[in-house]
Each structure stands twice: as C-alpha cells, then as structure tokens.
Amino acid sequence: MSHDYALSHSAPLERDARLVSGDAKVAPGEIAIAVVIGRTSEFFDFFVYGIASVLVFPQLLFPEFDPLTATLYSFAIFSLAFIARPIGSVIFMQIDRLHGRGVKLTIALFLLGGSTAAMSFLPGYAQIGFFAAGMLAFLRICQGLALAGAWDGLASLLALNAPQRRRGWYAMMPQLGAPLGFLLAAGLFAFFVSNLSNEDFLDWGWRYPFFVAFAINVVALFARLRLVATDEFTALLERRELKPTPVWQMFRNEGGNVLIGAFAALGSFALFHLVTIFPLSWVTLFTGRSAREFLLTEMAGAVVCLLAIIASGVIADRIGRRTLLGICAVLIGLFSFAAPFLLAGGAISEAGFIVLGFALLGLSHGQASGAVTSNFSTQYRYTGAALTSDMSWLFGAAFAPLVALGLSAKFGLAFVGLYLLSGAVCSGVSLLINRRMLDIRD
Image 1 (spheres, rainbow, N blue to C red):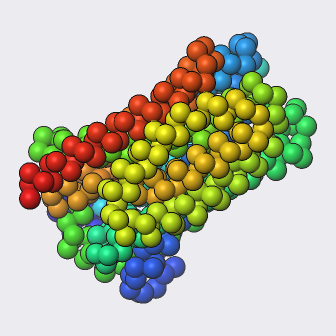
Image 2 (image 1 turned 30 degrees about the vertical axis):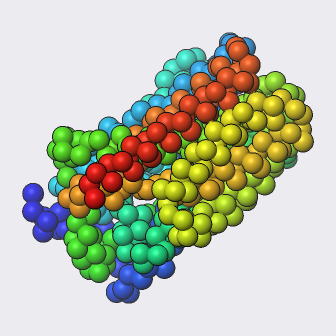
C-alpha cells in the first residue's frame, strides 16, 4: 500500500492535531516533551495495574484462596500483557503500513486507556465468580496489545537526531516516564488507602486510578499527534528510514540483534519489578507493614530513580552507553547478594533495599532502551527497536513478580537474589557478545 494512501487515512486525525498545534515546526525539545508525556502515561497505566495486582485483585477476584495463592494468581494475570506485546507489534505494524502512524497511534492509545478504564467497572468474585478473573485477563491482554501499538518511533527519532556526544543524555529522556508514572500511580493509591476504610477501598476507592488513566491517555495522544501531524516529522522519519517493515522479514535478516538487545537489558528489566511490585507484595503479605507506609517509601525511591536516570545521561556521555550498562550489570549482580538480607532486616533495611534498588534501576534503565539499536540496519531499525523492547519486557519483567514471590515463599529470599543475579549475568554476557560482534564488524 502506498505512502500517500496511508497519509490519506491519517488525514482526519492529523487535521485535528494541527488545530491544536498549528503549523509549528518540530524542535528537539518538543520531541523530548512528547516522549516523556507519552511514556509517563504508559507507565501510569502499567503501575496502576501492578499495584492493584497486590492490593486489590487477590481479595476482589480470588477470595476463596489464601492471600499468598491469591496474589500468585493475580501475578499470573499480570504477566499476560507482556506475552501479548510481541503479538501486538505484529498487528500494529501492519496497521501502520496500511493506514499510517496517526491511525495506529490513535487506536493503540484509546485501546490502552479504554482497557484500563474498563477495569474500573470490573465486578468481583462475589458478583460473577471466576468470570471476573476471566474478564480481567482479557482486558490485561488488550493492555499488552495496545502498549505494543503505542510504539511511535519518537524515542528512536530523538536518539538518532541527538548530537553525537549527547546520545546518552537524549536516550535517558524517555525513561523518565517510569518514575514519573510510578509516582502518580503510587500517590493515588497511597491517598485512597490512607483515607478510606478497607471496605470502601475495595468497594470503590481502587477504581478511581483506573478511570483517571483514560483522561491521561487522551492528553498523551494529542501530545504525540501534534508531532506526527507535522510535515517536518514525516520528513525526519523518512530521512532516518524509521518505517515499519514486516516482522518476519526483520527476524529472518537481523533477528540476532533482537535477542542481543533484549538480553543486554535483562538485568535492568528484572530489577524493575523486583523493586516496585514484588516488595510491595512481600511486605504486605509477610511483615505486617501497612501498604500506605511502604508505598510512601517506594515513592521516595522513585525520586531517587528519577535523579539516577538523569545522572545516567551525563555518565553515559562520558564513558559510553554500553560501558555504563556493563558496569550496572556488575552492580546489580553485587546487589543481588545483599538484597535478601536487606528485605529480611526490618523497616530500615527494607528502606535501604528500596533506595539502593531504585538508584541502580535509574542508572541502568536510563540507558537500557535502544542501547544496541544501532546494530540494526536503517531498513529494520524501527521494527527491530520495537520488537527488542517487547522481548526485553517479556524475558526480563513479565514473570518477575510471580517467580520472585513464589520462590521466596517456598525457598526463602535468597532465591530472589539468585533470580536477580541470573538477569545480571545474562546482561553481561550479551554485552560481551555484542562487543565482539562490533570488533569483528570493524
């Protein structure tokens, strides 16, 4: 299908975006702002669900089981979005090729916001039995499909147009969405947990953050369409050849780069859930500490993460992105030995686990996205970067809360450290393989 045909299908969306934005040209700062807004909205949806999978869904959907088993079932549903993401990329890449990026982005973000908002009306086990869990699983799969479709190429465009010596600085900007999204989600839940009785919270209080997600996604949609609608953005995409290609074709020619990229960031993505979702479940199930208190501790950790992400941009521009990722893999490996002792050492030690973990997460996650994207030829870079992101989340983060909670409950917290160490080792090996490939290529 021709490029003109795709543009004609996106035209109504682009006209609406132009009414909001005018004919302003695209500046690097505007790209950065749009990327941060878009990523913040995605991570807000992500963490709203993640926190609810600990505080709400076990009691709402699985009251017939003990709290641990109910939480494990909840985490199993949590993983479905990550399994669906690669499938979503295949679907939405085809929509992009046939109907244009504006149509694809609009469908994806409305599906994402709509699925999250629909969860706010979810009935519980008391109303419809286990059909409620089935409804949640379906909506969770829709979230995963939509997250794949929300890939818009803005982050890659931002990095490719950055000055050579400031690539690390521009690469960290999209990652700011993670701590910002967590702060918004955790803040809302902390407010409702603090000000409502447990009965009111489980009845209606938890639903409000899910409903808010739809409004946030509408704002993010127009922030992105404002750029997608401009002629300059289209020209930049074409000049950089950031256009979708058939997924099977990309895998046939450069599938190895997807695996290297996915495993290069495995330690960071494993750490991602081990300092956000898993410790909330462990603390509320086994220590008796209040969810409100621990959410506030995690919010402080998210601020540390935000600062560490910014620092990663400065450091990466001095020593190189891959070098920083390698150092972070070593540090995460060392942290994996201390993590079990910190989590089992009481409130102060738990706070230390959160602060150190979020600091390492910021340094590593700040440069984890697209660190080896340059390995792809320009023809496959757009599709390759999208699939690399999908696989990183699938291999590194999808099952982390489920595995960590299951292992720690049965065998002890030491196995959580072992799980994290395996991710750090995979990252180190992948980076070494990538370096050797670059040496051979040179």
